[in-house]
Image 1: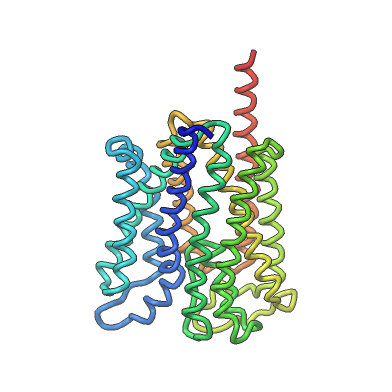
Image 2 (image 1 turned 60 degrees about the vertical axis):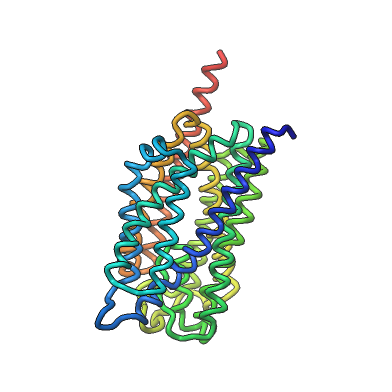
Length: 362
């Protein structure tokens, strides 16, 4: 291994560790945010955790329009450094609760998130080559997703056995699905503690997928389209099992347990299997999306990652608002339709890229 390659690999590992530390703290705050905020409701504090998360992703989406300029002017390293400070400010606001500070830091972290992820994409591409982009993406994604393991482990030990924990709204696999498990009356006293366990198992699936698929694509045994197709199938299996195993009204129940009965008697084993499949499928999509963006747009990585995060965060912001109102079956159906459409779009882009490469050989 040459000194240059060692340096590039070292940079990727350090990048992953940095995101691990930041998002361990952010995951912990995000997953218990609504619960903590509800306990603080009084004459001087009236914030909403759901509104905060919606603000974060809404600002995140539109801040991506400015992120490429910032990264170009001050560079990816300084951009990530200052963005990390904004994340620290958001976490610190939980120590001294204030409604205006709560929402102000939500805006700031939305801005910081756009800068952080755009700079991350640029830095990852800078430290990768065509032959190493898949592996480096897998290494980074695996390290990043350790944050879900550590953050949810803390949540489990802190909240296990308590009855006041309610919905989590970070994303479907770590937010809506955790809410569904916690609201399932058939799980009894263990339901609340299972939220943290579910997040840990999702993290395990992400880590396994990040390492496994990075190595597979590196050795050309699996094409990117094969991994993405596998991710779609894994998610569809998870959605079907969730549909059978979890009550339909689970996402919209916050103060009471579920009233409707699922098709199967709810099983903890099936619920945690679905958590693993959600994490595994998510890693399939994300590692290959990062890989193809870094490969196709190696010279324009900053705007490419900014556009990608712009679209992604818009849908995430919308999800935070509808997830508390739509029954589980409609949420699952929506994800099936969009997942299938997104997979087809990935196939088209990959095919166009391969066709372009074939033309260049002649």
